[in-house]
Length: 411
Image (tube, rainbow, N blue to C red; front, side, top):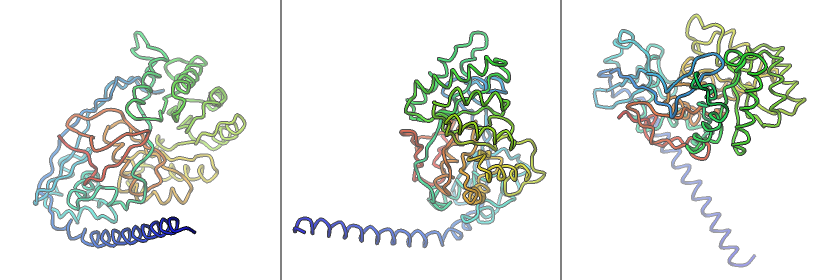
């Protein structure tokens, strides 16, 4: 070994030792800081809780899905801002009424929220606002409060690829409108698109609707060859017709198929076997829609136990790969506790987030905090009075910022 090589290796070794020492020092410092979190949270009391609203403004007017009417530009959302006696503030989406939250004024933040477990049951309507407030008090991003077990760059898809070919209803724009929507979101940084399919259920009945779904899928694949394509039928298909769709788009390299039809073992088994025959390697995602709600909130929030048990049974047979339970129906704090059960079952998470524009950023923190989030549902657009400027959508990923709380600013 010559002297130059020896010195180079020695320098590399020294750098690795230094990096390891720095990492241990940072971990020790973080652990020491976390030990003070309960005291820091206990030093603040809730002084007031304000309500305000924000209206979503999608980047374009959106068409319908297989079941509903055209979505337009978005809807209004209620938020709550928490202010402590020391002037710390945090806010988040919350539909809670004044009567529900009035009794929480005066409480210590530590009585309502713990970094290790999340929001207490009585404060559940303020779940998101309390995470944001805790981040402000502790000067930590939410994903670090959750444990920082996942990546801060997460794949994201545009969830705004609706049936724009069907609008305006009096003069539909055709397939080109869907391709244009994908191209618009591509410019914004997205490299994955979820196409709404199932036109045959309501808008173009029968075989012509199936053909239009195929035409749209193939057109987007041709226009965006470097991107992931996801499809979502909102349970609009019958199994036989969906098998025809899969055959027709088998060479389009679908990333995942969401809710093709009402979930049942026999049809999903037929789908999985058919996909293998035609060479479709897409993941199967399910769990957003629910046929019944829980009688009372439990660890899976408002999803009924029999619904959840059935999804896990289907996953155990290899018939469902991704759970798309809604972020709010489960609840942010509960998501962090059920995620290990998904991991144990070999199931990835891609929480349903449509249609509040802040929700993708909440989910990005969840993924960066606890891991196991396969991909985030993006909602191109903004909310009035909200600034998402700390977040980047870059090369198909959403980048979670290292700023206190969720990093969403109320302007």
